Image 1 (tube, helix red, strand yellow):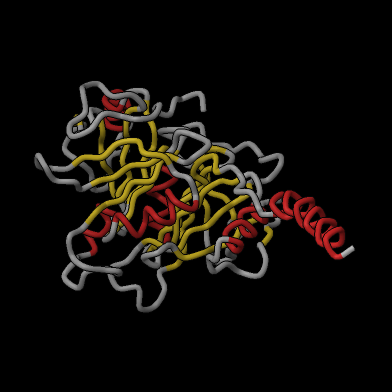
Image 2 (cartoon, helix red, strand yellow):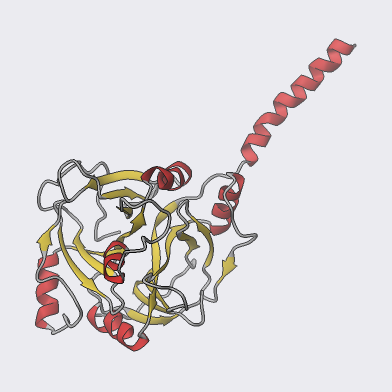
Length: 312
């Protein structure tokens, strides 16, 4: 009887195991970039930059009543927040990624032992989101867009897709544990200013073609190096708008007298073989216009995933 009882118990345990496995949270899809949030010390000048030079649509901010959104499409935007006291040279508040389920992502990260808030937040526009810190203390949001996003009125916007975001990173290994290990980001390209050096590491979201770029610095971290200036940090902390032709966009901006902010002298081909052109908002955050496709062979490493396209 004892042997029979043990056998029944073992069968019950084995039968229960698949049920337990099935209840483990599954990582929702991360489909692309939602937004980047930056600070401003001059709201009027910043509004002119984002609405006139970039041509984005000014919208209220459902996440923060003190903030403003500058949208380039119905689900991608730049969130601009008032400069907080003690910000120093920092002008980056957070980066944000689109997910199919904010609550599902919150549960997934919590199950993996990552520190998460107790609940997601919800906006009047129907979106939901939550915020965590990555291994170096950078704020990262996961946003579930509204089920039916409203169209935006931005006839003069210079591009309709944010294709990548980048920020200061000290330890590639620590950040990879989060973005690649937990979130499933996939390699795209890496390169450097000089042969044999790695200054930039790009990896795409697991369920799309937009990407994150580590802007590597040699100083030990985390945090902003003490000697780093606001201008230097603004080059590292940036976002990129995709263009079919950066040279043509540059000509259009020049012809319309919209190049009234700090910017590069002219478009150039970057180390990744893609045309690019940099502009800077009034607080120094860099906006990189970049071709979707490479014109030349990239330095340093090949592309290991498909590039974004204007149709996405």
